[in-house]
Amino acid sequence: MQRAKEDLLVLEAQAGNRTAFENLYRHYNKSLLRFAYRFCADEQLALDAVQEAWITLSKTLKSLKDPRGFRVWAYKTVRWRVVDQLRRSGTGDDQPEALNEDTAASEVGGSAHLATSGQLRAHLATLPTDERHALALFYFEEMKLSEIAVILEVPVGTVKSRLNRARSRLREQMSGDEDG
Image 1 (cartoon, rainbow, N blue to C red):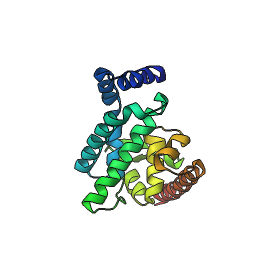
Image 2: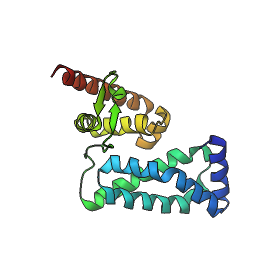
Image 3: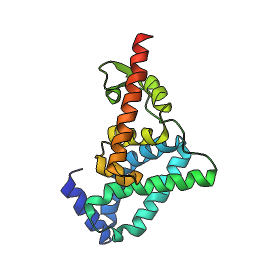
């Protein structure tokens, strides 16, 4: 969605325009569900968390001062709803990332070879949770470092460190795949 169009939709939704809010919902819901599922690896928990997040967003949208911050605010809200759901269910958030079963380029690891999503999922599952989340937001959701920092509530330098460590670990693991 173009930035200006999104900003206008947010402003209209803040003014009470339901159609504008529904358009934001249609645009972001799939990616928020994907993000929530990657975070918890539980489909029902992700659905519940995203539904709760949309309810929260609808009730608090008027408090958002800058419409350009909607995307980050939505992801951060989903993250907190997932954390709440995980606490309620008594499970940790150290679940493996979920990916489609298609073939994926292993650009995350910096290698030119292709890896199946199963191989990539296995490598991602070995990463610490914080590194997996940073990678998912950066590569799969195509977010900026500053946006990731806000969502994960850490400094930008920490996001950079997590991405660097994760890339190094994946590169090491994937080069081992080529040798074996």
